[in-house]
Image (cartoon, rainbow, N blue to C red; front, side):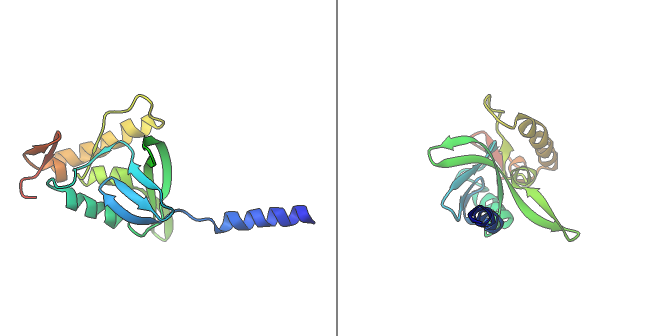
Length: 161
């Protein structure tokens, strides 16, 4: 009997556990989860604070994830206490739950670009193929960082912003 109660308790805990919620969007590529974990988006270079496009990029990220549940695919540890990961958020498409790949959307919007692939990357194929495709969509369309002439930390920004 005790065995069945233990199994039932484990199943109930598993059923009630949920995905973390984004408590705060710190920047275009960093979020704070409701469990206190700080997460940096894997493979992205985004505008730094106090540079052109920073606030636009942060707002785009907030639109995608703030207050929403997220699924995290860890890449590696970036800094002490900060996880580097691929972020997915659920969306409804034709009444079906799908997942939006947030890292790729930031690249597609032109608010980030892909860093060179790290030697120790866990998801090299994802890093190389998907994001280069996304970046090639943003660059020819001259979206965000690909729109202008101001250069800051090797990321180009539109002078209008």
